[in-house]
Length: 83
Image (tube, rainbow, N blue to C red; front, side, top):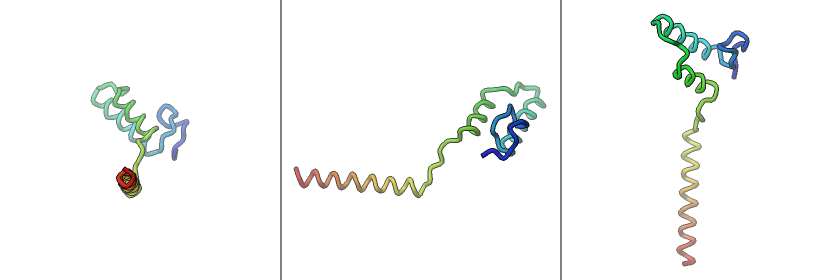
């Protein structure tokens, strides 16, 4: 995952070169505006970069939903046959 050098990346974090540039751009923009840069927004950006949300494959999700629906239908029909 890390294309960059941890010794030179922001706070030594395992960021890709692109992520490191994004963080440094954020800091530079904040400094130019005279605003604090060590903010909850920065922490959230870093958290997303280090622990990205799970990406769900839409085809796999649709298949899983279909299998679940078929299983539910089969269970319902089985109960109706025995009831």
